[in-house]
Length: 194
Ligand SMILES: [Zn+2]
Image (tube, rainbow, N blue to C red; front, side):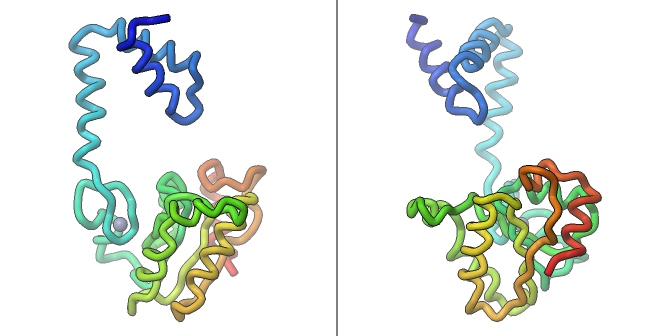
């Protein structure tokens, strides 16, 4: 319907989260109508992402080998908080209440979908939690069905690591997603871990 260049862009954009073909088409024409300079800025911002890699300890995006949280001497290295994704880490950081380190699983698992287990960092977590300095692991997955099955999986992974394992206190609002919980609620969920 459109020239192949535009069709290709629409196809690419429609793979973005929450973007369907209609929005993708609008984005494509927005980009098409930008001035060369403006479009150059968008291209530059995307290209700069190639400089970002993952922290070798927590898997947060960073431009260094070890991220600013993991390399911060003031943080408590004996506690690891395990989250599903980086946006959850950001929510917990915003509370300014948690002073330990993190580990990002990279997704959730469902017992019904075998391939999920290859997409999360179970093996890496086991290795990390087995390190001498780690004494407690706080499981901070979302409080919904997927978060629940992921938490059970994490508990299993940690069984032989010899660390204390705790879970966030209940009481996150509807949907149970950390990303949308306010700072006070998250703070009391951390305090009320058990
Ligand atoms: Zn890190």
